[in-house]
Image (cartoon, rainbow, N blue to C red):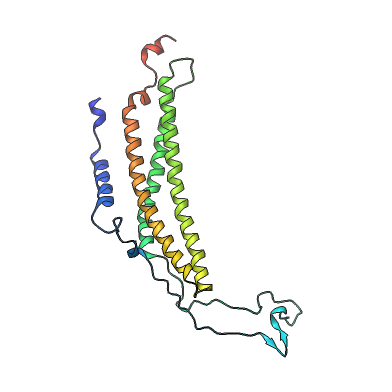
Length: 234
């Protein structure tokens, strides 16, 4: 049993590196003041200008321009047009850097869980009546691996939802630059995503530890669910 406690040196170094990354003094995941992760929204507030589309008492908002061939131009109507004087609106660079570091760890966990899950499933013996305690341990291990795999995949969905939500808010800022609430909401979304990323990293660590502990404690039953004495009876 003592041989089972040996850990590959390469794997041990990876674990140590991962542990140092999430507990180091660098400000990557140890930001105290969340204002440090805010990103400047370069969308100037324009001067109030009143436009009118009326001509000779006729309101052009109720009319559509006709092309020479008689087709209605749906793209032209009276109203405001949103332009970005600063060009493309940039993402929050600090959060993007963090996401790019976390995503490979999430993908690695998903791949490792899938590999170990398949290994345990292939070790499940044929269905027999009785002496299935070891088989139940294998099935419980597979269930736990499947749960961790699904949770890790949900982390990627969460990151995608952050980008979509932030994009909608930034579009609102571009359309209504004079409304401060939209700018405040973007800051809140960024802070929430930073906290979520920090929780995700902690959860990745916890899931590795729990799976390692579960498999190590039941490795004999996982590898050999039925003992030889019981097999000799059949």
